Image 1 (cartoon, one colour):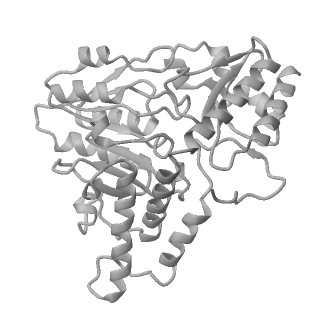
Image 2: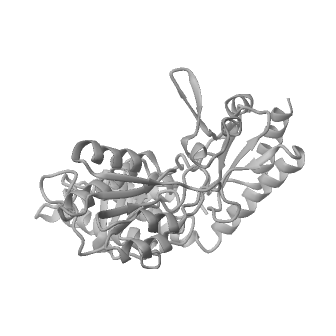
Length: 384
């Protein structure tokens, strides 16, 4: 386990779902490619040899995290870009008959906005499946919605706010039975649980570096070999012609190193985080009996996230009162008016409870001492 890169006196950081610190080992891996290994990997001279080999290694490391063929990995600049490439690329490459995309109500905005843009710009039919009170999609709803016109189904593996894990393998089986493809945004899940693209049955899968201890600005899309996508960026043919532009070798190396570290930690880190998450939940529940309400599925969720509402405590006020805690609320401010999270609203969570929602997401450097401290601070603030 690496040493926490933070400084003494900083707030307790429980916002790992928003972004993770860069692991020092990842920084060390990428540093040579910011200096001596600066060559363009597409060049034909010796300065290209080392960067080209590093790019191939990073592709293999990233693929190994999800049980994929390295030939199917496409490096992108962000998870949002990977989602756009997956969805827009599939729809625009699909036969003319297939003019429908299906997604679900609690998707990341990168997915929902791309689907709606395809409707606005290309007349693509968009179907948005509902979720239940825990955030789960019912496979029966997909079965009722899918048609011979469906080209793609896009359902995230785990939600970024509640961490509810969707039944992707069941959804993929239904999708493939109707001749369509399935994409899953796994940015929040990768490195936290074991992922195998064949076991899930997915055709496309999104990863994001800054969710697993690599820098912001690097991500990847897995595409099952043999499938066609229309590129987002045209040009020199890099990334198998799907993403033109000279590759960001240093950041690709960082993603590969982060993927390898995450894969190595899957034996013990998920259970450690589950223990800390449950410790935090128990402490709050004991101190604030009857006031703490879990948002999301009680069992089908990632190990590191606790999304709760504390009755009588508006989340923005609660976090403002706990200045030594870095966490997220389940609301957003638009034009000076606080609005509940669209994810929680889609789950049927009432407005007051949604506005009280706090997302506490733990990570590699979270300690039991920090968890106890946060529980005390939150309970004290909520009691006031």
